[in-house]
Length: 217
Length: 339
Image 1: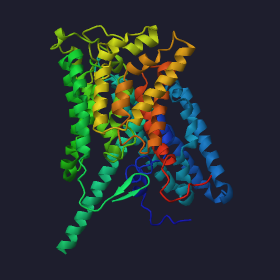
Image 2: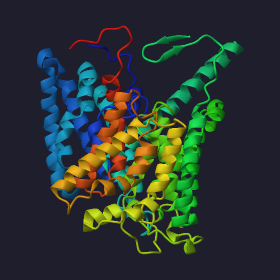
Image 3: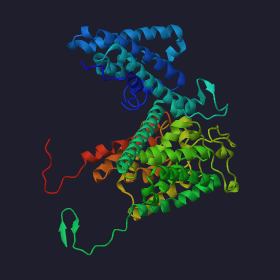
């Protein structure tokens, strides 16, 4: 097991938001990403459900890691995740039946979100409870951020509204493709493009700074 | 001079400089399309010209914005964006709002070409990608056809062209069904003479069969297109539609109507022969063309939309790398691969 001594709590939380963003950098969890982001509210509910499942299962996995045998760990992680997904599924059904109906099979499918299993295997099972929960919260918030970015763009263009509030008046011509799956792929691709472009620009800038520093020394 | 089998000439210097360059080939297609453009303006008014200019502007601007500054001059000079914009414009309905046309031009160059790595790296025909994007995005505007007008209405520009960005267009005239729409939904055929001259409703550049064939002959004479692809498309579309016609002459159109209606001629001569997105080997070109003809008849006969040329070409574009791999000619002197 790796030690937690050289970990910084703030860093572990913040990394999931931008630097190691599960969607934009790791490109994980594409299934819910493309399937449920046709409106901002769907995206946020999906993000919330994922947040609950990820924090809960990271907490359990990190606390139970001593008793989880190495050979069957993946199946045990999945059982833990499935428990929380079931809780999220029934809670949504009780609290927001409309949204639950729209999300359909994608709430149970959170079990199969590789981003969640990935965090258990790569982080929660190797670190203490405190860091596991912080990491889970950061990653899930980063995931929600990405879902919301995609969902809001698609809802604005595809429906002319945000959170079901019309933005452009009655004569708005909807971009039908944006609420269909191709729109999801196109929007995600363009967002990834901007993300990578920004990353390259930043790297080049840091190099220039380093060179300038070397010259002045 | 050494002559080798098959027809490979190896000569010592001096050599003649090859005149055929990319900008020159693109320019040839432009020249071939001039009669078609004039016909579009004749039938649909000056608005047609505005639409064409808008798609070209959309394409050129996207190309300029997303090309690194040091490569701009070369890329902008190869005429390919000019041609893509023109081809896209000719496939649009005459009453499409200009802002949608601009968006289509940008999508054609951005999503159809630049994202793949520029000219020569794209898998799909950029103009058709732009059209597919528009058809998916604005399905109603893209299937609202205004009737062909007489010369008296030459300077009348349809009001729907000037719809503000993001706004639904308001159409002046009653929309008219295309010959293919009439055939599919009302089992009503259109006279061949009308299809040849182009006095029907439809996309800007697809209506006039004779002028399209004329441009095709010019390209053939200039050796800009692989004659096998259009020939194969015509032959297979005629064959398969003929078979369907024999089975049920009421529901399915005959071979001649199939060939001259819709954008089959336009697609076969100007879209499918794009050298980047069609197979390189002669055998591959035959397979490619036969596949397109078959898919056109299939989509027109049994699909939800009356026209299927665009999707047929895009699908076969996707199959092109595979066709190229399986029809690669044997390297001279090497044994055929067994098994």
